[in-house]
Image 1 (cartoon, helix red, strand yellow):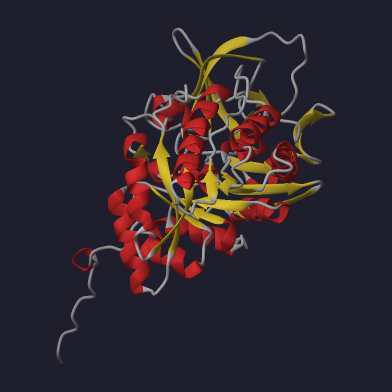
Image 2 (cartoon, rainbow, N blue to C red):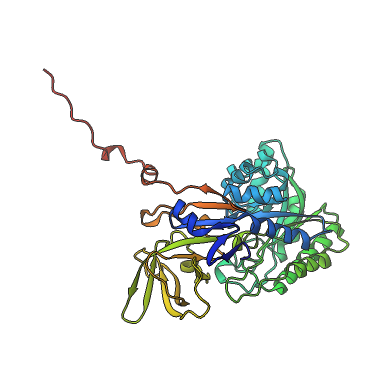
Length: 429
């Protein structure tokens, strides 16, 4: 969290005091730090130096156009899983030849959009998908560049809801049928088979599952190359975790060393697709305490952010550090409190029995490491206005996604014509 630090007793985003932003933007709001985004990309570039690798930022973590453009200017490509994300990447000036289109449920329209854009690669996950892509490409008189996603049946040792590389998961082609699928793809006139891909999950903090998956993939790659298949790319996906609490994130230099070791002598062009590790620590959610409520057994800090703004704690029981914007004295007494939102569901809880310094109504809090899977998973549940997003660079700040007003929220619905009051008919004189 080096981009977010206390200065003169106040939490800052780079050189911008967050209490000032709160007065300008109103809470709750997301704040992102350019320095953290650029630093994350630079760390990957350093760790993977010397490899023929394209670093494709995974938009599913945060699809704000300013985030994407900041990373694209640093050198990143994009990993997308929908036509919407593809359009976001293109709108943020990501070069089409640095875009990978993944996902198990691509439609014909999405395939066509990727072909028309001239993307680098489709990551294909099944034989039916391969057959559909072949038809779409032939209809357009094109050949679709493809890497077949292989499911290596590797346990990523992460939360079951974000594991993607085990045999029972819905993703990829199992190893036993991968060679057959590659041979099928190589014979399709609308398919240009270029490589293999894998992705074992998200928030992975142990490098051992990566090594196991990568060794399976590169072993298959070497076997298929020896059999004459024209493979030249290996897409290793993403999934590297970050430290939310006492997690130990994987060392990027060690990750790079594994890639060098398993790909030595293959001559393959490599792709990696980090998401959370690019943006997780680059964003925080600022919220204001509405009131402090003393229950029978617990003290509740009721804040103006809610699970519609940040769903990770409700969905994954995820931990986020929560700190006051105004720094507490080091010797301040701590009290265990529940930090909860205003939505009428018990699951609208950010922290249970969290040790906090004294906090009063109107105080500002920062929910840390919220740059990934925060705003991008938000909703307007309870007809709440989604939180705005602010990007900071040095002493500058800009609202990069404004909070809509209630008129805009209401305009999302079109009332059925028979429900709309009609003007009374005028009588005939």
